Image (cartoon, rainbow, N blue to C red):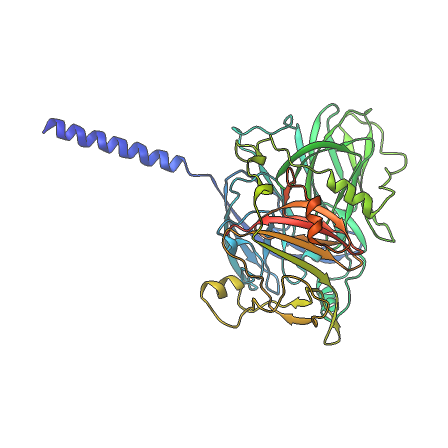
Length: 489
């Protein structure tokens, strides 16, 4: 009897210890409640209505650690539905948390929705922003940084601090007026200015001799931006969660929706220096400045602003081609980033997506392969899950563009299969830069080219150390970019 009781006691202790270890092994949770409201601010000097998150413009910064879970209750106090999307966060089998109309119903006024997602196996520089009704033109965006776990090293000396810089174009016109203009068939007007962290002028403070990480994101609507710091080279170390082969640049092009992290050493004489962002590929150049202030400085920033690149599209493409994945560095896991050999997998399907701006029913609309997308009242994810007919069509859009196809309107869906490995070509035939973003996933950017794509272009692909990212630029004037990505869900 005594030995039986002792055995039961030991089993109970083992089970208790196992339970404790299971509880302690779960990744940490972070809980937030944010309220979305309107407010009146003067980002460009004149009062205008902006979208605030918890009374802040830009919104609160989300600082997370790899594998942490986020539970965020979003309360909508606007007068129209609202959604936030988490730009670059991978929603593995969790796409209904992505915050776009294809997967989520917008949050009605005076209602709330709780986002639940995990930054599983991710590090890097990201953002969040409103995905509906052109709210992004009024604010509602913010920084989202995922830091590495202490047990996983990073391939550079740990910086003495970091700064998040949200840079983007800005309109004085109310977002509802801009939306009505687009809906009437007009193009989006040229912006009125640029903002850095929601301001036309701001100051960044640092100590001489120290190295800081600058996390730069383009949160604008339509304008590519060049970033530079007077007298300070930029060592590029991370792009949208990918550690890259580290090169040093004087200036950096950051296109709409993209993010990058650079290391800057404050090794110049103690004074203040200009931080400059300016528009790219525009006849009129808009500029926003900030000040990098050395803590022992007694002199204001002076001298001419550092110059932007002289050359335009070819220079920008040439710079983008220098970005290479660091195949030996850890990412969020201890195994090297390049341990997955994407270049040795044969794609199961090729999709060529060509953007255009046709007139449909007398109105200017943007289209892909001649189909202009319209949102359905029912999110596509729900329609697919519950097999609801008539919500979307997998036959309305072709996987190869055809000039003979008439322009049309549809809720178009391109079908794929689980675990398909897909080759996607983005073809830009318009006279404006385009940014293409993949919600909830990322892709390997294997090449940039000019003219019309043909299968012969595959000989130019980088199938060794192309980096993964969630947003790529496609240069205008019939220039194109080739993408390969893995469809996982």
